[in-house]
Length: 285
Image (cartoon, rainbow, N blue to C red; front, side, top):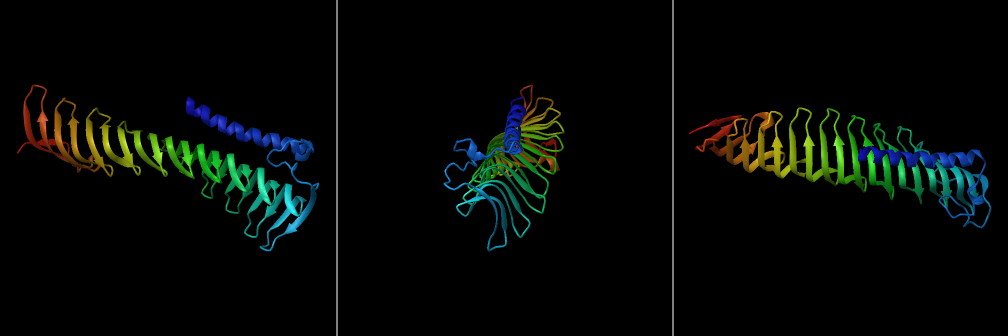
């Protein structure tokens, strides 16, 4: 419930910013009439803006309001490579609400500060993935939602353009990860619920199980122990459906039937036995 509310608030802010600015333009209002020093305001510029065209040495062209021989006010700048920046300008940089589009289909819409996205914005990359949320210094930073072309979804915290902090990743197949992130990877404490009913709770590193963790199969079998690079590696305890506990050293991956263990079996009746656990079976010497 909280995540839906968070996403809705971010998107609502983006929509409101756009409508407020668009409505003021339709009414013929200019930022200089407000008397306030807001983003896009020209109150600090001494000369009244004029509509002009300016061609730069690199071939880019600016059309819009100018003052002091610089882009100031509403305008559009087109580049030879097909990129277009449209919005409010201040001292030759987008500053305020605006958008940037590219021929490859990517675009940015939102609030800009000195030519870089700042605060709330929307980004679409050339692959068709969308990001809605907070930006800082032109990069995703703060709270945001990413809709990938693959139909995976991430909702959570960002830093310098990468997932960082707490977040939820929902895979197309229904698998869900909830936990910590660092540098764009699942890292630290997390929980994963798989679409087949299995689950894992524990430590992650670079997107894989790493450290202490508990894996519970959909059928109820449970493993508590040490993991490395996504596989069991070290001390661990397996409890089967008959409540037999196998304690010892484990290595390998259950998913490809290579998991093995040098273990001691503890039975509910108090008996014990030593042996190997191989491919889902306990083998006595």
